[in-house]
Amino acid sequence: MAIVRADNLSKAFRVADKQPGLGGTLRHFVQRRWRTVDAVREVSFAIEPGERVGFLGPNGAGKTTTLKMLSGLIHPSGGRAEVAGFEPRRRQRRFLEAITLVMGQKQQLLWDLPPLDSLLLNAAVYGLDDGEARRRIAELAEMLELGPELTRPVRKLSLGERMKAELMAALLHRPQVLFLDEPTLGLDINAQVRVREFLEAYNRRHGATLLLTSHYMADITALCPRVLLIHQGRLFHDGSLEELASRLAPCREVRLELRDPVPAETLAAFGEVQQLQGRQVRLLIPRGQLTGQVARLLAELAVEDLEVRDPPIEDLIGQVFREGEVRAGAMT
Amino acid sequence: MRRVARLARVARVLLATQYAHMLEYRAEIALWALSGLVPLLMMSLWIHQADMGVAPSGGGAASGAELGAAIGGLSRVELARYFISAFIVRQFTVAWVVFAFEEDALQGRLSPMLLQPLHPLWRYLTSHLAEQATRLPFVAGLAGIFLLLVPWAAWWPAPGRLLLAVLATVLAFAVNFLVQCLIAVLCFWSERASALERLHTLAMLFLSGLMAPLELFPPAVRQAAQWTPFPWIIHFPARLLAGAELDAAAGFAALAAWLALLLPLTLLLWRAGVRRYAAMGS
Image (cartoon, rainbow over the protein chains, first blue to last red):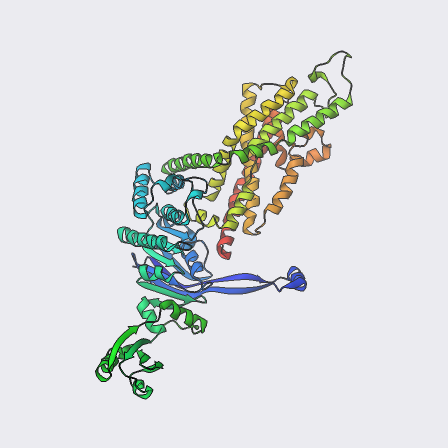
C-alpha cells in the first residue's frame, strides 16, 4: 500500500500583475490586476514504503510546491494527497510525527546555540524521553560523522556541518517519510557525498521513504532508482532514470575508430551518421537495434576502437526543456 | 494527564533553551532595558512641574518629599513612586512578537515551526519569558540607581500588595503579548504588520500611562483610555506596586476581560491566517 499518494494534485496561485514604470504603478494602485499561475497541474503518483524517489525539473517546475502540499504546509487547489495514511492539509499530530520536510538552508537550528540544544528541544517537542533522545542523537551523529561540532554554536559551523546538524534535527523523531528539498545545495563535493551516503544508510536502516529534489544530478543518480520528472507543473515521467534516458534519447551514440576511411553511404546502413572525419565516426543507432548493428559493424568493417555511450542525462533533460518538447499530456 | 506532563516538559526545555539563547544577547537586552527609561525621564519632568507649581511649604528647609505641589491629586512622592513602578512594570510587560514573527515569516523559519507538533506561539511566549529572566538583573540595577537619585521616594510595598502587583504584571504581560500576537497574525494577510505595530506603540506610549499617570489626563481621554487595554498593561500594575489607593478588583476584572477576549480571538485569527498562508504558499 502506497505511503505517499497524489491524485490529480493541483495548485494554482493568484499573483498580482504589475507593469513597470510610474503609469504601471498608478494603475496597480488604483486597479490591481491578478492572474492565476498553475504551479502544479493534476499530478498523480504513488510511492511505496521504503522507496527513494528523485523529483526532477527546472526551476519553477512545481517540485517544491508539490513537496509543500505533501507535507501539509500548503493546501492543494485541487486533487488529493495522502501521506502515511493522513491527509497532509489537516496537519494532525501523528502525521507531523510521521514526516519531515528539509528545505535546504531554511534552518530550524538556533543560530547562537550548539546544535545539541536544538536537538534536545526537538526531542521534547516530539515526546522522546531523555535516554531515547540521547541514543538517537548518538546514532545520527555516528552516521553523519558529527562529534564535537554538536557542542559548538551553529554560527561557528561550516555549511556542510550545519546541513548535517539540520538533518539530525529533522530526523530525530525518526519520521517514516522524508521530503527533502535540495538537501545538498551549496555543499562541496565531499559534503554532498556524505549527505547522500547518510540518506541511503538512513533509508536502509529505518525503511524510510525518501522523496527528494536536487539540482545535482549526482544526488539523483546515486540515491534514486525512480525519478519523477515535472515541468510546468505537469508530470512528464515516472520511472527509472534508464527509462527516462531511453525516452529522451531513443538512440545511443556509437563512436568508432576505423582502420581505413569508409564512405558515408556505407556507414548509413548501420545508423544515422552524426560525424565523419577521416577514420573517426559518430553514429546514432536506435536502442532496439544496438546489439545487432554493433555486431554487424565489427563483422563488416575494420574497427580499431568502439565506444557506446549515452548522452549525460542532465544534458538530455536540459535539451528537452529548452526545446519545449515537454507538452501537456506528454506523460505516458 | 500525559498531555499535560508532555507540555510541562516541553515548556521546561523550551524555557531553558530560550534562556541560554537570550544570554547570548545579554548586551543587547541591557540596551533594551536602557531604552525603556521613558518613565524615569518623565518622572524628572513631572517632578520639575510639581516643584514649579508651589513653593516649599513651611518656609524652612524642606525634605525632597515635601517639596512641590500635588499634580492631578498626586504628590511629589506619589509621582516618583508611580514612574519608578511604571518603569519596572514596563520592563516585564514588553512584547516584541510582531518583529520576531515578521522576521520568521519573511526568512522562511515559520514553515519548519508549522511542521512541528507544537503551536509556534509557545516558542514566542517562552522566548519572552526567558528574555525577562535575562533582563531582571539590569532592571534591578537601574531601579536601584534611580532610587539612589530620589532616596526620599524609596518604599517597600506590603507583601500582599507586592503579590498583587506581581500578579497584575503577569496578567498585563499576557494581555500585551496577545495584543502583539493579534497584530503579528496580520502578517498572514500583509507582510508588513510592523507598520500597524508602530501605531500600536504610539497608543501604548500615551494611553498606558508611560508618559504620565492617567490621573493627569483630561477626564474624557481618561474615560476613553479605560476602554482600551493600554492603561491596564502599565498604569494599573504600576499604581498597585506604588502602593496607591485604587480599586484592585476592577483592575483585575478588566485584565481578565481583555484576556478572555484576546485569547480566543488570537487563536481564531491564527487558524484563519495559517489557512491563508497554506493557501497562498510561502
